[in-house]
Length: 149
Image (tube, rainbow, N blue to C red):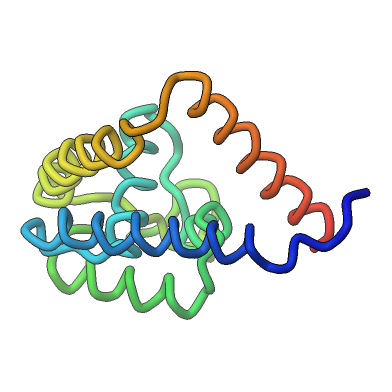
């Protein structure tokens, strides 16, 4: 095992992630979405596109690695703005299913296109082999962290 990195890698990772988040927040602002709201909307949008059973709020929270209270606040806000609905879950009478409304689907399509364009710009400074290496490195770091949890 390698010795201490002195915190340099952690700082660089945090700085790059913060730069990406700041930029993507600006991209999402015209769509009226924060980054956490966008992540919830996109999780539900992916679910609809794959014709799967609706997700519960708890499932969304786990999938996104988001605190349950934060997820609850985000869902309430999106529901208040009529971008999603909470209804009886088809597989669990105690759970509430989260689904996007028509307006939520439209917002997801538009915001997703702009977020993809942002990612293309942000990560476009890297070559193909660097992107593959970055994906492998980030996956390894996440996987190992999950093992320690």
